[in-house]
Image 1 (spheres, one colour):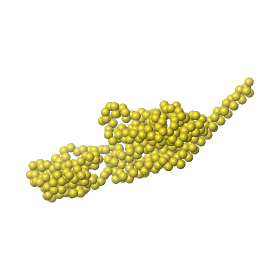
Image 2 (cartoon, helix red, strand yellow):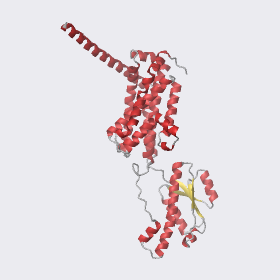
Image 3 (cartoon, rainbow, N blue to C red):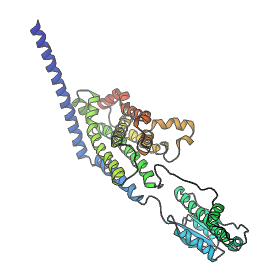
Image 4 (cartoon, rainbow, N blue to C red):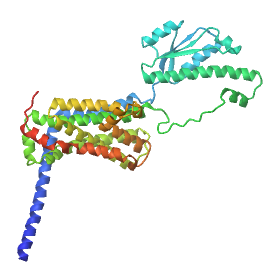
Length: 409
């Protein structure tokens, strides 16, 4: 009895070991099959490596200066005195503005704005200097276009500053002539001093602002698209049955074996991006390297889970990729980076939780930008995990599609 019991246990242990060995061998064979598919199809390399890394280089090089410089502006100087010419020279000396023209009338300057030749102009009417010296409070005007929001706001800032500096310079000269001390002049010209502290991005650097939102968003888009593309190609080229049979009908095993090589490639690309922007270029980050690793991992897995889920809902190569494209593009608006989510209507605020980019952006903002622990953003971390698990909802439908569906162009 004892011997037969021991024999049964040994047989059971051996059977479990052989079963596990067979499982790993099956997983390995599916992974090797997927690597061969990736090697033969150049579209994978373009969308998984070339395009994502290209977007990193594109945004970081395009915005290398941090802010746009020498935006074209103009001056309409009808006063034509040393004081008014001094204002024009000071405006031209600003880093973000460059005086490219001087127009004889407001109408000509307005036409130049409408044609897109300049972003704004400063209007100094005739008699401005005389009115200043006579304390008659002359009015100078500036006009700018907000067709391009960033350029318009920057030009407006320079034009407003130069207008304030012009009046302050004349006021300083008049107070000095009356015998006022420097302290009295400073108090009269600036009664309240603003102590400004811009946190996280004190340079107002557009490279830091845009690259850290656009590049991860594009990576999420590429990953979800390639995930749907991979499954659609199995049906398109008639290899889906072979793929499922390799996993002995286990759809979860087939999915893991198929997407694990892609996951490793994506992680290499994502971690290269994080090293490049946060450690090589020096973007501000308060989070630990482990936080960056975890966020990058969840970013990849959530995008893959979303792509597989969409294909499972609609097992069509064209339709699934179209939905992934639409959802990925909408994510740029719904993540809250370009327009504050709190200012959106309540239905849109609720809808934003269905976009992976929203949760990634909040994790980045809370844990990387501001340095809080992951516990402070646990809901967004769990939400990305939910996107990873979404394929469980469509596993049966996905298996049925792989075994029975016929590709329709």
